[in-house]
Length: 181
Picture 1 (spheres, rainbow, N blue to C red):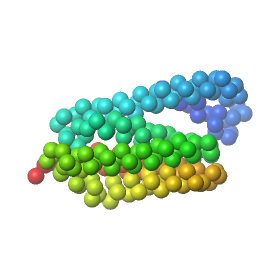
Picture 2 (cartoon, helix red, strand yellow; picture 1 turned 90 degrees about the horizontal axis):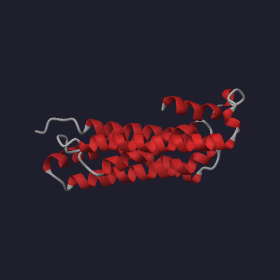
Picture 3 (cartoon, helix red, strand yellow; picture 1 turned 135 degrees about the vertical axis):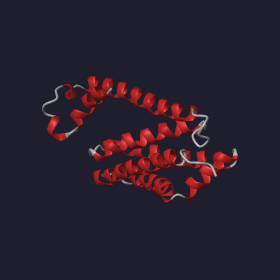
């Protein structure tokens, strides 16, 4: 999968675009893009499913976790291509970041009204500066990507989306691993 990712990404980077010959054929790039999109969706959903299956950690045991993982994958993946200067990824950065922030908030709200152990983690995550910063950065990334149509604004939105995904994922993992008092 890493090899396929490199095959798809190499023609998009300026020094390699003259060396890599398959980047000139639109059909080959479309096929590689479709294949990589399918692998990306699979990996994101699988990660979320593995976490949500863990019954011993109530904060992760939610149907919203695979959806959150999918939207974080869309936000971070399109954010990476936004950093490479691909202006057309702006709408995907906005979509992925906005839906990741919304799903993160919905996940935490659902756990607040759930069992006591899950509510404890959700309250902690809702008060955690990293978690709140991740949601805020995701919303800012979505706004910048939606309203900025030029290369620098898409690159900034991509960087914000990647940092937001990192913070949201960090809070999800850290608040799932605790000792209930």
